[in-house]
Image (cartoon, rainbow, N blue to C red; front, side, top):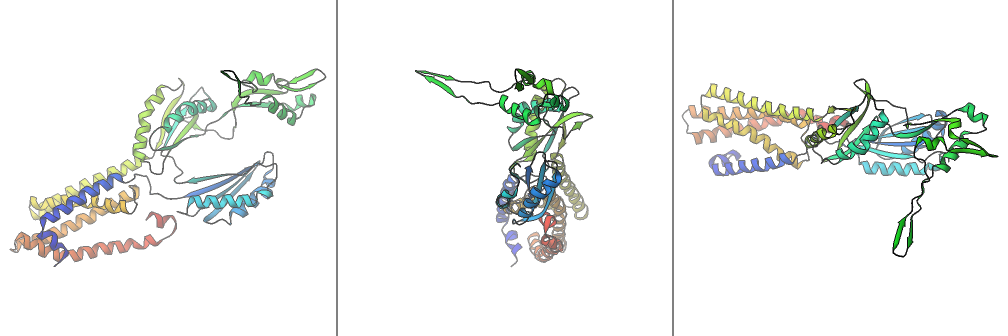
Length: 459
């Protein structure tokens, strides 16, 4: 007795099993996470150390080299890169694919602490940052203006747009890219400073002394509590200009005497443009378990409100949307499935001439794909470009097997056997070859799974 005989002799059992596969498969399919690519723990850890004023050679010899040698001994390192520029050392560790990111971060932090005493005391403490997952945001939104500066646009986005986007379900962060932070800029004039006997250290000391942030606390009495506010900081350009830098024998040197003061961007090291105008971008990052399709839908629902409240000269534009590729893949699977069903129906009807025979592949093709969702969910797969591509290719196998089995059963009916006998004999004859054919195709692609690196992880 063959395995297929059980379902042919007991049609109620076959119907119940098919319904279970359908229901459990639909539940599994709806619960699968949707991503552009499969989940990869691709981690980079960056160690950044600032030493203001130090030359690249000094940075390389006394900061970059000790840190690089220490980090290289940590577990899980694939390869290292380093960069030493004026005032900054950067060491980047690329972790092996799918290595535990937390373990790698802990090891590198411990290694950096071991050589911290070798770093010059004037240098700032090393900053260690971990980046895991895809480096590209799900969505990029650009904001440009012909009138406002990048610092002004960044200030508005930080206060209004960024908190609003962070409320969308599935958003991990809304990162501002290419923006500038407002800062008070003091453009010192060396000639005027030399004439008044003032050095850069005198200016720095004056700024620290005059722009002091205090926390005086409260004054408490009987049944009264008064909050004390001491305005010890400088708040606008005028106050910075009138700030006293040096006072000798009644002669007062103010900041405006030796410098030009203005409110501008903290740094001019980068500039971003969109359509030829100064711009700032917001990159919307998804949570590890977030659904990009629902995330982008939620973000797009907020865009009309955001655009309505923008300053008059600011224009907004969606520069990149990764879900277009995901949705295109899903649409391609639907289109391929529909085409396969139409072709199968046409071929079977033309060669067999029976509408009843047409119903069998129409049922088996969707049921097989839905049933595959159970195995995908059990193995931790996601719906991504690669798994959807695999489904498109698998449709051909399912169609092929359905037609072969159906044609063999139909042949026995034409030879005079009853439909139940034809089904029993036809399924017995074809079950082995169909399974062998499927295993043969799987064996052809199986060696790819033993490859290492990104290729082995993807396939």
